[in-house]
Length: 240
Image (cartoon, rainbow, N blue to C red; front, side):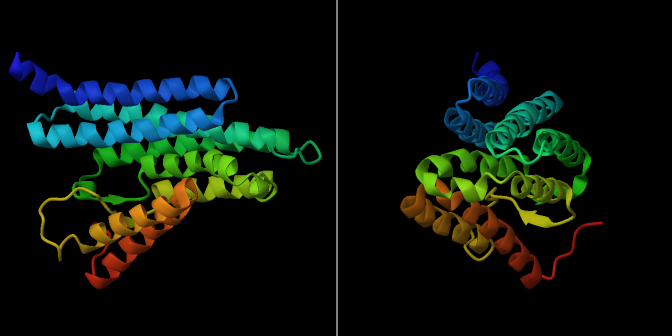
């Protein structure tokens, strides 16, 4: 019984990730983008703990890896694209152009699928990432409705369809870009080896404490910046 629980617990947590993504899509259909965004954050928590459980229990399998990617595709690919599509719909429709431009939101699951397929087959990404991870991209998109709820006065600046479309294109490029980014997995407690991870967690906690969801875009930018600084200081290159 104990062995069976050890074997299936990580996959059960992954399924909770998928379940959260499905619920989020329903909230999007109901035009409740705030709860849909919360669903992405909940899915991200499950996504973290399924990997954590796998490492602690030493329970790894090909099925678990594939299941994780399938769950991520829904929670961090389809769901954020649905949220973005609704945001584009809610923005001003400019001379009948925007109604077609809105479909650009569905490039997010396309590039998320490419990102996940690349991750599953790229041996260079065993201890770090190459390209922006899909959960980070999804969390960034999920922060938009929450920021709008927190600061409704900035909606006219954020809801521009052309601005949102450019944002979508930028994030799609970041998903598949050959940019090395650090993983938040701690292999050991050595401060010097993990200094950039500790800095990211420290500043993220401070920013979120004071600015709540408005801090998310800053945290993502800080994550990319610290990764590039780490790359520069260690003279690393994208593994070939």
